[in-house]
Each structure stands twice: as structure tokens, then as C-alpha cells.
Length: 213
Image (cartoon, rainbow, N blue to C red; front, top):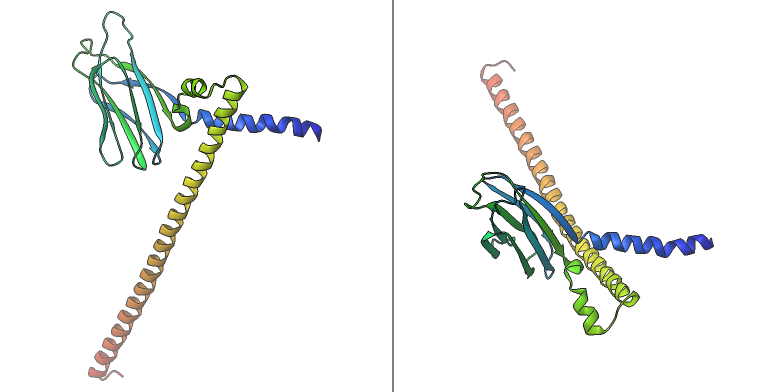
């Protein structure tokens, strides 16, 4: 029993660290000589997003450049840059939905080869500047780590609230869809019964005219 009490904090810490790391994504993109490659992430409203990108040339004799465009779910351009070998974009989301970051090789790729790009995408608690927080609040070491864990717990709580609201929205949509399907089924059954009754009536009149019944 004592061992359980000792191990429990470590499991909680591991869970928080795993959740914390889920807000940070290191992505390796291979861009074709022509065309565009995009990455997207569904992010809720009022979340800080910070990303760094850099071209990793295979041949150091030339440095290819690329174009970058980041758009919001409603199509608003949040970042646009061309002829870049590296860069950074940061913003606070104003809309809930999929945020899209697109990369393409521009005309300075004389070799016509694929270009590798390293993208470090951070959202929420992972995008926070903890060095500035430590200097401002004059904390370090264990206190700083506890501050990070406190932020991770708050992020977990906000994410659970968001998921709960999405679940409620999906439940409402599902109930409306089920109600429409039920009404459609009842209407289809009524139409079938009406058509069958009309067919019987028509056949009865036909046989009566022919004096078969």
C-alpha cells in the first residue's frame, strides 16, 4: 500500500508531462520541387500558437528558399512570406477550427530537387515563454517546474471543458438527425400505405368494370 502511495505522484507527473508534450510537435516535411504541402491542426479559440521553420539543405552548395502561408479556419491570412530559408510565426487564435500552414518551394531551387523543412509547432502551454515567467516572478528550479505543471493542469481542465462542449454539440446534432430520420421513416411508411391503398382501389374498380367481382 505504501508503494502505491509513493508511485502515484510519479504516474501523475508522467501523465502531465505526456499531456504537456502533446502541445509541441516537431514535424519534418519533404517538399516536392513543384506543388504545395500543408499541415493543419484543430485549435480552439484564444490559444497561443508559436512555430519555427527552417530549410535543411541536402547540398550545402546552394540554399533553396520556400514560401509559407498560414491561414485561419475562415481563410484569414495570419502569416505569409516568400524567399525564406527560416522564419517564425506566432498568433493567438480568434476562431475555433483547423489552422493550415502551407509550404512550397519557390523559383530559387535551381537544382530542382526535394527540399526538407523542419517545423517546430507549439500551441497553448508549450508556446509560453517560461524564461520570461521565471525572470518576472523570480522563480527557478522546482518552483518553475511546479508552475509549468500548474499551467499543464489548467490546460487539461480547459481542454476537458472544450471536449465536453463539443460532445454536447454532437449529441444535439445526433438527436436532431435521429428525429429527422424518424419523421422521414414515418412519412415514407405513410406514402407506401397510401400508394398501396390507391392501387387496391384502382384494381377493385377495374375488376368491377370488367364484372369479374
